[in-house]
Structure formats: C-alpha cells, structure tokens
Image (cartoon, rainbow, N blue to C red; front, side, top):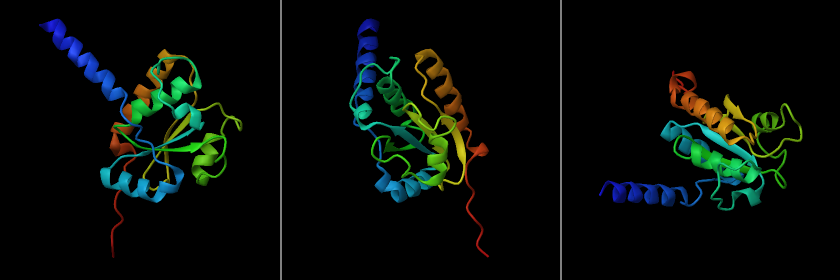
Length: 161
C-alpha cells in the first residue's frame, strides 16, 4: 500500500512539472507589474532563447535548455515570470534588466535570471547560467530564501498626503 501511495505521489509530481509554462512576454509587462504588486511577489525576468522554452524533461542537465527549464520550475510559485528572447529582443528590456543581463558578460550565456521588485526599481538577486546542476540547486535555494524573506525587498505603499 505504501508503495502505491509513493508511486501516486511521484506521478502527481511529474505531471505537475509538465504543466503549461507560467511565462509572460515583454508586451505584458504592465500586467506583470500589477500582478506582482497585488500578489506581493517579485518579478523574475528570464533572458533566454525561445527554443529553450520548449518542454524539457531533464532540468538537471547541464545545458541552457535544462537551466531554463529549471529556472521556470524553481521560481514559478514564488515569483511572476516574464521572459525576453535573447535573440530577437536583446537590449529591448527595461534599462535595469538590460544592465543586469549584460553584466558581467555583455554576451551572456542564457539563461540569466534577474529577480526584481514589482516596480522594477531594485534588483533582489541575479542568477547567471550555471551548467552544473548541483551548483544550480544551491544557487536557486539561496535565491528562493531571499525571495521568501519579503522584509528585505517588499515595497511599502506610499503614504498619501
């Protein structure tokens, strides 16, 4: 009986990983900012290539496709996700995002993930492409802790006078 329960849990977990992508496009930025503020979540901006957004069942692999899939799965519950296509939308992002995507490497390896406040006024964290899956897990674990500690980044409503 325990084996059946574990198998059912594993299958449910796998099917939840195969859910449709929660990514938004750059054209939806205003909607994303409003939703992030309303849900008290940061925005996770993923700079990657569109072909890396295709379903991928090996997020622990060492390539850019795996790293993009891992970023989406790791952040989808704690942030509002938006992406820009590194091939066709390069340098069209808001200035704060563009600067972070291209620092320290102006020709970055995708994906680069920039975590920002809902107003896009402050960078909370940045995750560079990490081919080693074990190192990637450590990095995302640390970033998720930072995201979940809203006292370090959450924007306070401005007082009306």
